[in-house]
Length: 132
Image (cartoon, rainbow, N blue to C red; front, side):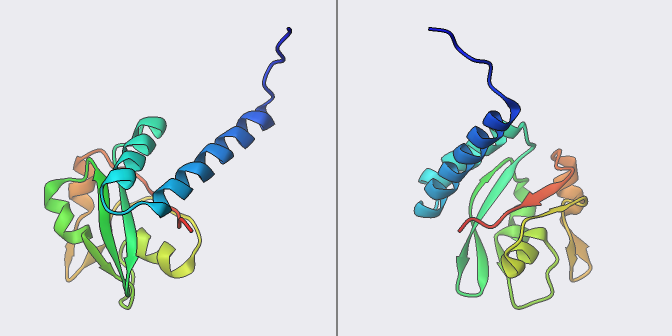
């Protein structure tokens, strides 16, 4: 049986379907477990410096999984309020419902910034997408 060469569009459709399946598994998971596996898979597949996953908890985003998040940055990113002015891309995405990329990996609040901590860990750009 002859095989045909995959077309670029077929590859993009396959990628989209794989990401949709991963998104469904992330949404159905709780802290740790599936979310931790999904975060590790994203880092491995994209060759990213790290990844984090949040769950909407009342009016806050609660960090539920991470990979290569600097220890000192964790207190900054563990809980992100949605009622305040957004300072991290995940807040903006959660409020708008639209994917976004930020050139600077961290914002600032109260005169302090997590940007240097993330940059030192290899984070250059932060991409955030809502998973519904």
